[in-house]
Image (cartoon, rainbow, N blue to C red; front, side):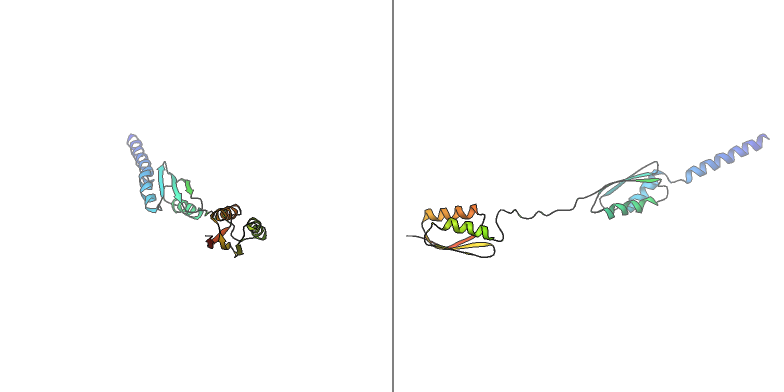
Length: 162
């Protein structure tokens, strides 16, 4: 009877050790998970729980990283702390200059130039083209008028009065 109880105890001990030694250890899980990690992703394992961290480009990459690992042998659960980079937003250029000269802007320029003799103005889609002969003082006034109206201009045809 004594021998039978010792044999049963030994069998139970071997079965218990065999059962627990068959489960993958965290180090083994870590090794297997690292082989599947995508660039920019780090995984840590504690008691079979895999925690993912890092930065990816989109939600699909985040979900794929988790699904690639959750079926790995020994993984109990996955904590997905991966962050998705926000999309890059390209801001439009500042509206400091009018891109299309509307009637009100054209009229503002015409009204400003009406007292300056010898100057003519033509409007293209996005700028005012000035021509004529002006004094240095009038040239300064013209530049101030154009700046206040926020208008692109071509003043290359303006000549200085002598």
